[in-house]
Image (cartoon, rainbow, N blue to C red; front, top):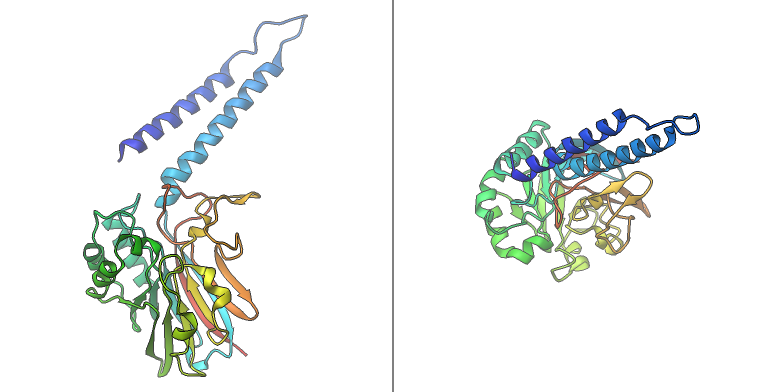
Length: 312
């Protein structure tokens, strides 16, 4: 239990006590033969607002960032091969190891919960790093526990390159997680070919999108992986699905107001979930960790299991 958590709980209890005392206070002496009830109602209302704001802050900084949900999503793709109908892909992103709430125990939980769903393929979409005190070879040894028949594959994100992308790649590949940096990989899935297209991070690396996609033979099914979803409009139409992370779903999202901060040049367009444009599919996971400020509100950390269906 951290000192910050203890202080936050104490402050919250103090706010609740303050509200209780205001609710119990008498309205005051009668004036002109009437009891002045409106001043008390105003005091109680203001106290309730203060308590409500305190609860929001407590939830956003101490509860929701520490949660982890498993979300399932089905995507129907036109002309997707019948042999790959129902392919299950686990999608993980933005772990931010070393950040708040991301301990080695949490990493093992991520691995175990993913394996329990028995995906056929696991992809991790970058931003492993937050702080340098936990080295890639250390968390790579924990992530080595991922298990899927087709394997575990990854791309790197901006935080990984701001740290040391080559070192992150070594730490992952030495533990069985293949990293694709403007590279393609052919998998033998259910007796047919499936190509993974790993595209480099938009913010920190040279983009070779068309050249990388061109390495996939014409007519072959493929899935593109990248960190930042803003490359979606530039992805050739022959790649039916792009998987991305980076946005954290906005990290803080209020009802009616929406996302507070958007890390996409397209605003809310590619911030989370399944997007279809011109019969072209994008899926953006909200990820697991936090960045800059250790807060999440309305955007619970998630592991996603995608089921890819044939649409004819």
